Structure formats: C-alpha cells, structure tokens
Length: 114
Image (cartoon, rainbow, N blue to C red; front, side, top):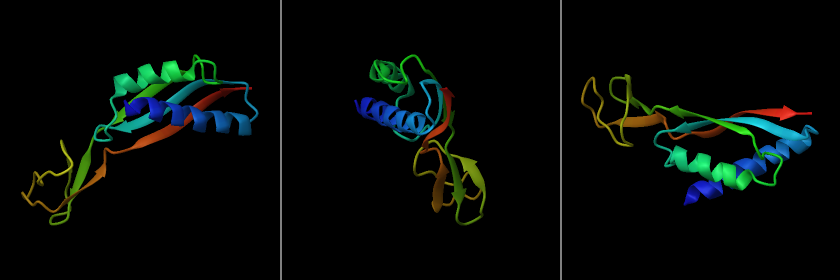
C-alpha cells in the first residue's frame, strides 16, 4: 500500500514546516489529489491517521479535495474532462490530447498552532 509512504511523506513535510514556523501542533492539512494520481483517498486518510500517531500532526484534520482530470486537445485547443490518461477530444475526436490536471498530489495549506 503506497498510501502509507505518501502519508509518511506528508507528515515529514508538514512537521518540517511546523518546526520552521516554531509551531507546537498541526491542527489541519488541506490536500489536493487528482483523480488520476493513483492514490486511493480512503486509504490515504486511514494511513494518515495511523502514521500521525506520536507526531506533531497527531489529531490533525485532513481535508482532501479531489481534482477532476482535464485534458487539452493539440488539434483544436479545446479543454475537456478526461476519464483516463489517454482520451480523444470530445469536440474534434483527435487523439492528440494532453492531460493538464488530475495527477496532482499537493499540500495546499497547513493550519498550525503556536
């Protein structure tokens, strides 16, 4: 389950920022996770609560916003919703499309207690 390693990485990054800011506790973390990032959100939440035990992030609220995949067509320039990494343009049918969002895994914000 790679969600545990992701959770541990999030805690490491958040703990480092908390230390830099001289915070005593992390009260909340907001993440953005793309639907095509290969992350199971439910598993990530479970792993986060387990991985946070005994850390500065123990008990922190984890708010995860899922990002819908969006592609752009190289032929007609149209932006459209994608369901998979490789999709045809829903306007012109071209296969020359690029995924421009939906793979994100970002720490958007951290709520710290001084």
